[in-house]
Image (cartoon, rainbow over all chains, first blue to last red):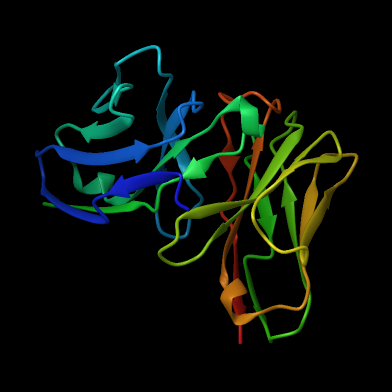
Length: 113
Length: 115
């Protein structure tokens, strides 16, 4: 059973456009929602994270929007660049299960120059 | 600061064999996590070690096991390899354990191919 559902599976965006990746969850005990970026041949790297007590968090061109009532959160990449081409994973965790991260299945983003 | 390191980079084994993967966490980190990244399945949680103890285990059979050493490095053992064990095995570390907001830092992974 996939605890965190991520969409789309792949995304193609023009340079300068906005990339949007969505995730949904069911477990209301989740209290930490990180996004990871993974380049080919590398391990995932933390990009940005949010807790459910805020609805939005922005770091540079990356923004997480969080909708607690809908149990959804999304990553927005503004002014997308070819260097942003990577696989993005959302995740969720709760201290109840001892810091185990539940990951989405990933979104392969391609930014076309 | 050195990141999480894993060895070997690649492994090719045949069905039924056993394999050991190794991970060294970031200096000062006491928690080590193991994940399996199979094609199309995202990252699946395998094991979590903290202060030398197994703290949590994912939904994997007992032939997946591991341990954490006094220096906080860790190894993952997989016995009786099956074809579906072919995947990228990722190790991550964090500075604490049991707190959901602990940032996990990943290593580059070990690519295991089972023939």
